[in-house]
Image 1 (tube, helix red, strand yellow):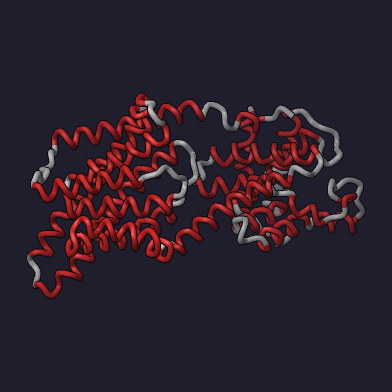
Image 2: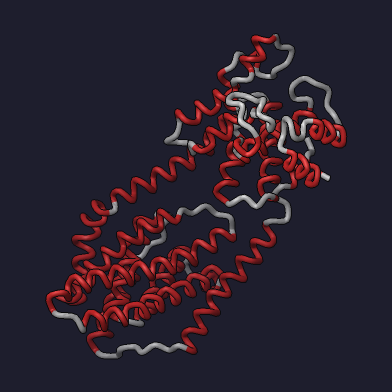
Length: 428
């Protein structure tokens, strides 16, 4: 079937690739400008240089590439935040060393890989995050020094938490923008959880460094934090990360299982999904709502699995069988709600209300106009359009003009007139 939905994703990859490179080079350029026009003072005392060397050697020995943010990003962020508090501008040097170490372990001896847009962008983020920490720490440090000794510990704890979260927030925002440009899923809530734990971890490292020096902080990290602290304190974050990953995998599995049905049904649902996505994009839906709409469209006929096989096409049914057939949307909603640990429960209503009519004469609740969720109204229009084009329900297939004319006949009664007009505009 060559329908309009097949071009829903056309011409998107090129501009995303260009925008991504522009963004990464922009980060590197912004970092370079800061280094040139806002120079920082590096402490060159022997004690500081020895501490920097020890931390640098430690990072080179310990850093490994990994896909698990919890196991690497949290402790690395804590080390860099603690370094910013204790060693000042040397933090960005240590961040660059950690980054280059990871890149070297990934790409081996391919030196040219170190100058890719990704590497330059990562270095830019490291510098910008370092400036954020240094500039936010200085006033808080002066405030702590001017308060009575009784409040030093509490105020230092608060200050380290604040500057660590400032750094993490700057880093998260810059990374999140990159992921959005490339349309890659990332949860800010997960990044926030890692940031909070890393901030507490940074305070402990600063405290150990203050009382036990750099050797004491290193021993704490290796002997205590890596073995016990990280396992216990980050345990909840690890489990939440696994749950988020399991939900993503479950959604992919459900889509794959849906393909076990007959080929015609799979192709039909795929076309409804494509056209629903086109309409949702043109309406400027927020990313989260768009993703839910697309998923609901892909699964909008899942409830038919609860119907006898003879009824699933809705062809040549008597009155009783027609009433039973109309319950498939309701069944779909119930199935989604019963799997709310695996699938977003928000799509249950979107699937259930796909048979509601714009004038309030539909099923199951008789919802009217805007009381019907917008994604449900989109799916209804997309479903009927593909149905008319393909003869999916057993009727004679129509060409595009006749299918659109039939949709217009139901505009304002069965379907949202604005969405019918939008579809007409899109496919023509």
